Image 1 (cartoon, rainbow over the protein chains, first blue to last red):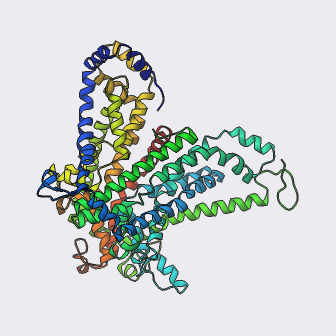
Image 2 (cartoon, rainbow over the protein chains, first blue to last red):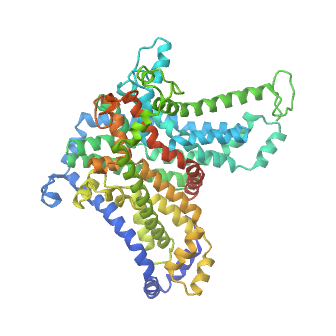
Image 3 (cartoon, rainbow over the protein chains, first blue to last red):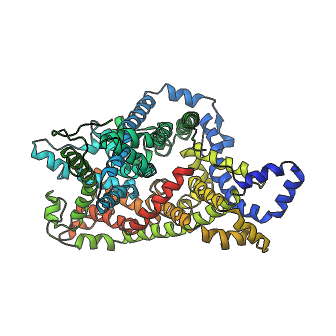
Length: 318
Length: 306
């Protein structure tokens, strides 16, 4: 967020401090009234729940409320680290997340590089129109689409596998395949969309560089290797760092839409576990403890990601 | 450095002629077409199933074009009372929700773009922090319960009134407008609120269009909040209704959507599922040309400033 005229004015105004601050406040009372709903929203719907995490340190009873419930210190967290189920969930989360990074992070870059090699404008635009579309579908619709084509009874994929003599596979309920389904469908939804940033970055590279390379006799691979990729490298690194900051989110909404009790052992991730424990089993305190663990680790990861990004690239999200 | 391409040892070649280049082109086009096809096929398959004859759907014979053609299934779906009701709820929430979102986002962003005002930096910091850390599912749920918002459609609007990310985009946009515009209006005696609605907003139409589409799509596609907070059948949103219909494929229990299917000729429960998916996606498809245009702007504004 760059320095604007306004903040320069702000610097000046610090000289006269309190008096001018009060005048500013008085003269802009209408603006403060305009801000009031936003602040109420922020405090009520964002900060009240933040303080609500105290129930992670209680044996929360919904009838007694936060005031009446018994404080138990770190008991819920002790339960958490002694619970095999939790390690399973943590493993699933990390595995699905790492698969997503390994397989899905490079894909948009490859797609963007390839789109850049396409000459026909109409063809290019047609392709883009198709590959951006899945981004706008809800996870429920996507689940519906894939339950349909992956169905063991007459689904398209199993029909095709059948030609090669493969017995029908129940992809959505089979622990051997569920994680792959999650990763592939996540890619299906977002690969085109995530390519947009790279397409824009490639478009921002100066054409003269390519012309100069051509005069030097560089071929297409040479141009990609020596101009295009270096040109988008800072975008790649920054997005990679930011992506790693969200490693604990394996795609809660996606998995919650797709999974079922048959694939809990491979598909249950932290987000879905919080949901099952909290709203399914009504174990409010334990669920909140798991959620708090998730939030705190997530905060640390995002903050360090941003720190790295600023150190190495002098670019950051805030 | 000059490199040698192809068998003939030509040193310089135009892009169009070389064999190697044709091979690269072939590979690139094949790869991209394959990706585009993989995105179309699941859709075409479901689309075909919603319009195919029952026997073809049931026997798993439908590929990416309808086998036979009938519209009874689609008719059955879009005239079902639950579908219409859920569709109506979703339209209502999307319109009302987006309107409220925009009002709150624009006013908050406008004030926060005035960084010289005491206190705005602090409020901005609080907003940014709320992006990084949240109370999590249960504290939110308990708050909604406390506020008596369970099974109340307001729960689909109020807790998400401002998306901090969207608000920051708008705020950055406001900051990028030349301050001379406002200064001259102030000299003419206009007050802050008049300036916002009469001068700033008309200048910000592209970004406002983008952000309202962000909000509208998020409302339309949201299933998580309705799933948690809404259980009354009359208040179910379309995504929630669709979820019930889709989940039946897994559990194979006969429920809301497929109840009277057996009595009908030429309509299968699988066809009904397919048609429900298509029918609830039509609004997104109808809006897609706008979505594509403005979203790309939005994602670029977002990635530059973030």
